[in-house]
Structures are given as C-alpha cells and as structure tokens.
Figure (cartoon, rainbow, N blue to C red):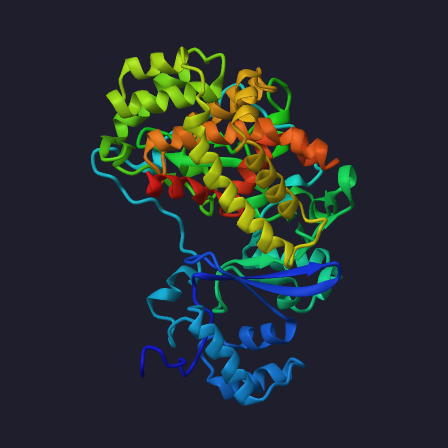
Length: 488
C-alpha cells in the first residue's frame, strides 16, 4: 500500500485526543493532534463514523456500524471524510501494532529494581512539611483541565450513580470518549459541559462534584482523589508534594488543620495504590544548555536551595539564580545569588512574555471558535493573553517589577512546593526552568488587573498563580518556554 493511501481499516491515531464538549447545549467533538497542536472540530454524525473506525473495519463496515447507531452515510462520503483525516496526519496504522501499546490495559505497577539503590518499593515517602489542604469543594479544578480520566471501573460506577448524566447509564459512549484515538483503551475521558466535568453540578460558589455528593470521595476517579498531590522518585525517597494549580492549594498556605496530602499511615512506596503515577528523575539532567549533573547532585542542591533564606522578591531570586547556574553551575555561590538577587530586568523578561503571549493569543483565537463564553479555560487563556500583551509595554512592566509582590507568601510556597516535588527538573534545562517560573510569577502578578478590568468574578481569580499554572500545563501553553529556548 502506498504510504499516502488511505488505510484499509482506518482508525484515529494514538497521538490524537478526541474530546466531547457540550457548548450551550450543542454537541461538538474536538480532535487534538498532540504532535502538531492542530485542533479539528467535527460534528456528532462524523464522530459516530470515527468512533466505529477502531482498526477492525474497512470503510464499508464502518458505514454499516454507524448506520446501526443512527448515523447513516454513503461509502464515498465516508471515504472522503477519512481521506481528509488521513491527509491531516490524524489516522493510525491499520493494525494495533506498537502504536496501540499505550492503550493496552494497565499492568500492575511494579517499579523496576535499580542496582545500587535498593528496592524502590521500599523508598520512604517524604511528604511536603508544614502543609495541609483545605478544599473548598467549589470545583475550580473541575473546570480548567481539558481531560478528566476514568478507568473502566470508575466510569461504570459514575454511570451507575448518575445514569441520567448525558444518558450514560446504559451507554458508556454517551458520557465518555477514549483517552486516545478510537482503539479500546484502559482509560476514558468524561464529556465536558461548557468546559466543566459533566458530573459537576451548580454554579460559582455552589458548584459541587455530584459523584462525591452521592457516593462519597471514593466515588470519584483516582486522579480526582489524589489531585493536587504529586509523587516523584528521586532515588532516595518518594517526594510527595503538591501542584500549585488549584486555588485551594494556595488558599491553604499558613492554615493548619486541613487534610494531609496522603494518609499518614502510608510510609513507603509499597503502601501506595499501584495505579498512582510515580515519576522518576533521570540519572542525569541538564542544569544549563550543554551542561548536565547527576541526579544525586541535583537532589542535594535542591535540598540546599529549599533551606536557603527566601529572597525579598521570589521572581527576581529565580532570575538571578538562573544566571548564576549558567555561569558557575550548582555551587553555593549560585544559591547566594538567589538569596540576594539583582532586580528583575524588563529586557530579560521580554522574550519570555512575548513567547507566552504568542501561544496564549493563538489558543484564545482557537478557543473562541468552539468554546463557550462561560468556559473557564477559554477565559483563563484570554486573561493570560491580555496580561502578556499589556506587559509588552516596557514602562508598565518596569512599574510592575518595582512594585512589591502582591502575595509574597504564595510565591514563597509556590517555590517551596516546586522544589520539594522536583518540578523544576524536566524537559527544560534547570536554568531555563528557573527563568520560566520567574516569568509565570510576573504574569500572575499582572492577572488581577486584567481580571478586574474584565469584570471577572470567577472564584478561580482569587489565586492567580494557580490559574496561570493550570492553564499553562492543562492547555499546552507551557510549550512557550521551548519556543524561547529554540529562539535563543
């Protein structure tokens, strides 16, 4: 078969996410290509055709299956539809093959033994100290992310508790789409109503998870029950920290008496639910472009930085630390620069803010074509685009940088949680990750002005750092940092 020919048994590729949205009562399906970032909107009838394309049927078989579901189509029209998807790079190979491996049922999570480091299952859980979570139950986290995952058992339980939601009681596919592609997979994604999980009920301060209300916390999927806790194996311990992506996290800073991040009876990795994703730090990581350090060295440096005196301005401290790391590596002198930073220079921030604006503005235009005006994800992206556009004015940026940080306690906690959870060690070199976080904090400082000008009264606006963090990770805007790295 020609590489450009339509596969005989087409199916959606594993790198494409299909998401069902109800926007003002109108059903829409969005195909998101993770490789290119392309979004394609299709209608319910086209989705029935596409969902029948599971890699086992030819086009005639797909048409027959779709007709049984009330979506009749002619074979030539179906062929043209699949040819359009194929030309856009959205179809996978004819058989499951290796590409289907991410969709196979999850295996028991037994971490590989690491010679010289002992059994990773015996590593102690090191929980972020002096923090407990006060969840307000208002569902901001249920309204900002693009995907909320359920495993088969969780989806069945949700449909049994709330069979009337989207008519999903008897038909899984009415409430859920596959996590990836259209091949049977181990996880499904719930449909969204105006950007909200379909199982979230109520508005504003009255919004509540209906699954929790009826069945208690265990009725929610594991991801929702563990959010916003993160788990990282750094070779010495399992760092248990928290993602500052939820307004409740930052609102909990300095407030004792909340819920612990994990059950205090859990002591080692072996005690964790096997389904929990425990990330692992690589053996070596880039500290600056072209320079690497061993994991143990990075872990020790992270501990020293966490113990350092917080600077008067966290964003300035991160920027100065980035310059020091690039100049001298992981030395004590670099940490001294963090504690006594130079003022943030508008010129140093400008390329970061410009790159984030380009990403946010593009996404805002795309969202306007299909997302509801009530959708928090759409609004957050618009606010970030407006904030970064305003900060392109040098005088305004300089004035903002000269002003005291509006929430210094939040910014200090943001960094403490990131260090404990090793969230600065990832795809970017450490020095660039530090500059990225400095830019995020500056955008978060500007966000209240944008929200006030827009007359926004969403509860999520109360914690702008969390709003920036959730929007960047949840909707791909964090790729802006790689744009800066490539440009430099």
